[in-house]
Length: 267
Image (cartoon, rainbow, N blue to C red; front, side, top):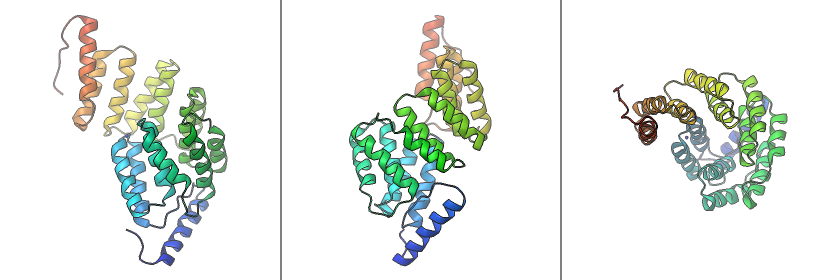
């Protein structure tokens, strides 16, 4: 879908300032001794929002180069490796997060307890921790995102739907929420609602190749292979790292289903 302040005192003051500012804004605090590391972390979240997971991972690596004890960077790296099914690496970063020596915010302590349970079994039900975060920070989309992650680990699709709709009441123009909503509706076989969600995703973030990749997945699910091909190729035209292999698969499926070649119009 990532350098250190010269004086320890300034680092500590910055840490206090970031935590207090987050609390004032009703946001989950992110604590680190390095402003540069925090910047890389913020960039990582933007890439994850765009579903460019590798670029997000690279920013987190940069953040950890600046502050090895950066809890949220280790935590997000652990989640990345759950997403990519690399459980050896997940265990490594989860251990780093759990053993973090830095002073953590209340939200981070809750996340530490969750990732510690997930170390034993990535399908452990830690949704109660996610619900506590939402109760504590009802105006922070990141709290809802963590709950959605935890619900996905136990395949609680209905729970994800409820959480996504709650999050959309907080920010109804958050593109990534509509992407997740589309896939949840597809899992629930509510295809009209899925298409509406994906179309809203496209409307809100039309320059992001993933919006067309997701719509292509929808068309594949509906067995509309020509439309899937066209959507994947839109993603590919925006960024050549996207869509081509999926487009070729959609083309193959179309030709198998229709018994004829797919007429390709260059866009």
